Image 1 (cartoon, rainbow, N blue to C red):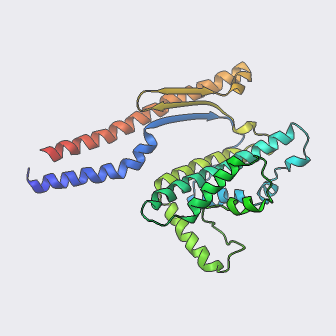
Image 2 (cartoon, rainbow, N blue to C red):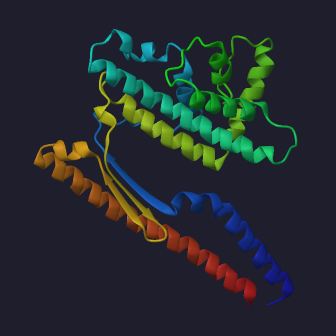
Length: 275
């Protein structure tokens, strides 16, 4: 084979390895979760809409609009349930913001000037660790640090140049939605939010993951079962376990097939480049 063809094969191998790098990060472990929900939405995933919906969790009136009662006016155990439900919703935003923080960290290695958003996020984490966990919302220090580092998809009240700032944020959001790692996190948070939205506003039981199995590429298999699974009637428990086990078998078959396909492509191109 001529040197030119060998060089083309090596170049193709490099491009394939680069293009599947993000995909391999996502498929090197199989994760099967089984939960029971009251309704399943048939809506297609819309990245921009999902971003707007999860970002809106930070709005002060979000839980009122959702119809989730103020925990302070509820008796026990409803008060604890309402707090837990709000905590679950807030965690969706927190995880998405954390993914954005990691993206900013990666970009920061390319410049010498520290990104103020990175500094503020780190200061917020430090503040939350060093202070009482029941931080007062009106604390002026916390108000400053709690401002999201994620770009807002809507106008911000305290901005002077609304239109230009909004266009700039929209452009940054579009770039985020083209980032493989961020979009995978966004999709997962959107799915978890759909599970929460499908439950009772006064109960957190509906989103329980009753069974979870994670299968690692190195052969480790980790299975977890929620303790409430074993408090269910025997027939319900057995049905959930049966569905979960069938999901594992189907998921493993597809997972292994995808891995073998990718490995086969890379091996064939590698052999071609050596001929």
